[in-house]
Length: 354
Image (tube, rainbow, N blue to C red):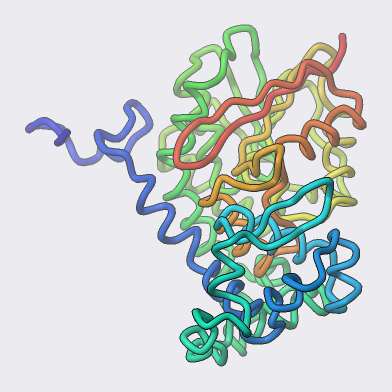
């Protein structure tokens, strides 16, 4: 469907309507860009499939043999299951017929030499190092760059990265707002909210709602500017602070963690959820908006590919629906509900008992 004639350009960039077309394929090209390098690392540097063909193993056994760490290994195994290369029975991983025929060295149809031409790609070699050390790579594999967590302390980088996430959020924020019933909520706290795009989307969709974006400097300055440019300053405020170190603003009956938890390892994820539970008003709700691996951890493929990118650039990964639900229950939340939204994202909502 094409946009009707006469639609004003600025209106088309606002938050009053969804796009006429579905951009999911464009999101997937970007989000899955590193998955090929992870597969190449496994074929060409680890000879992973040849070994596993002879030694079906559980995840701890795979980690021990290859001397690799649990987090990147989990991402790798999920990707390969989503690609139809592995299956898991009672916790033991083994090859599918596809992988056995084309990714095992002794097979006459072994395709490894075709991938070997890619083995020297910097990102591919970085994946080998990440598997072996669990250390985050430099931003986009650039030798003179910092890792993402440290780079976000730089004002120029933070502004550029925040603008990139803002562009993604114009579509995703509206889809999130449509998936929620906020009619009984009055105050949203958007934790790690970047440009404030999700807070602005929610207050636009729900007129009674006001919001506070809790963001760490120097992102808070970019957030204030972006909110003003959208004309939302009267309803969306910004509070500066570190979500791990500083007290969270109180009084909110709705918390939002949009694309936050996937940046962190399990201890940090649990810490964030515990802080949300403590600061949230009794009876209030927490919304997690993210890309979710399914409960079986064998897909969806676009999310498994995106998880490879996150594993490379951050301390986190795409967590599964089941992992999120378990983390929430351990933090004290109840009534967990998951629903897909748009472009391979979804939202999980849980309630703090009154």
